[in-house]
Length: 304
Ligand SMILES: Cc1ncc(COP(=O)(O)O)c(C=O)c1O
Image (cartoon, rainbow, N blue to C red; front, side, top):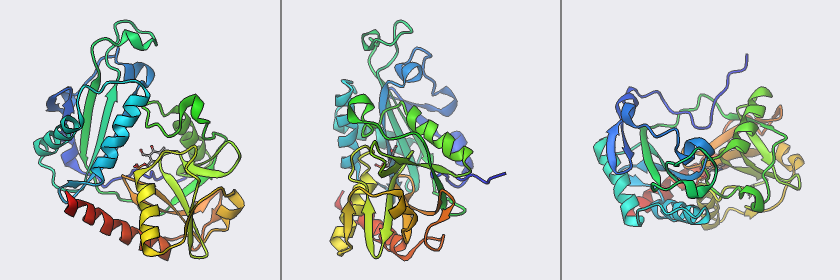
C-alpha cells in the first residue's frame, strides 16, 4: 500500500475539537456550526472562499486575500453582505474567540445562501449569503517531500469555469487528485489545454533549472498569492524567475520542484510520474526561497 501524504497535512492538535466557528455573524461551537441542506454551497458548490494563515498575530498578506475574495464574489455576482472592514472584523472576532495568536489557518467561505427550492437558479437564493470562517490550530507537518503524478484532467479555458476563481466547486481538482492517488502519488500535476505544465490540484507549481526558477504563465491556474510572493522575492533577490510555458521534459529534468500555497508556503516535490526530481530531497534553492518568503511574511506583519 502507498503511504499517501497531503499537501495540507498539519500536526494533530486536540484543541481543534473545541474551536469556535464564525457563522453568519455568530461565533458558535463546532458542533453547532451547521448550514441548511438548501444552502447553495452544499447543493451546487455556488460560492467562493479564501484560505489565510496567521503568523505571530498577523494574517499574512491580508489585503491581497481580501481583495481576491471581493473580486471572486463580484465575478459570481454575489453580495457578501459585509464590506472589507466587516470581513476583517469577522476574522478578528473568530481569532479572538479562539484565543489564537499564531500558527492558525482560516478558511473563509461565502455561498449564495439558502435556497427556497432545491434547484439551480441563483434567483432561488433569497435569504442572503451564508458566510462562515473555520479557524484551526495548524502547523504544516509533512513527513516527506510530495510525490506528483500527471493526470488526464486539465486546467480549462477561462470561459468555462475560470480556473483562477476560488470557487466552492472544486470537482475538476478533486477528480485530478483522486487520479493522482490511484497512480500512487500524493497530488496531481495538471497540464493546460496545450499540454504545458500548469499547476497542481491544490497548489501552484514551480521548478528550478540551472539556478533559475520557472512557473507557468499564470494562465489556467489560481492566481496564488504565495505564487506571486515567490516571484516577488526572487526578483528582489536577483534570482532569475520566469513565467513561461514549459513541458514535462523540462520538468522531469529539473534540479528541484516545489509547490506554493498559503497553507504550506513552499513544499518540496521529490518525484513526478515515478521520476526522482534532483536529489529527491528539498533543494538549496527551495530552502533559500523559503527563507526569503519567511522574511517577507515578517515584513508584512511589521507593516500592519
Ligand atoms: C487550486 C489552487 N491553486 C493554488 C492555491 C494557492 O493559492 P494561495 O497561494 O493564494 O494560497 C490554491 C489555494 O487556494 C488553490 O486552491
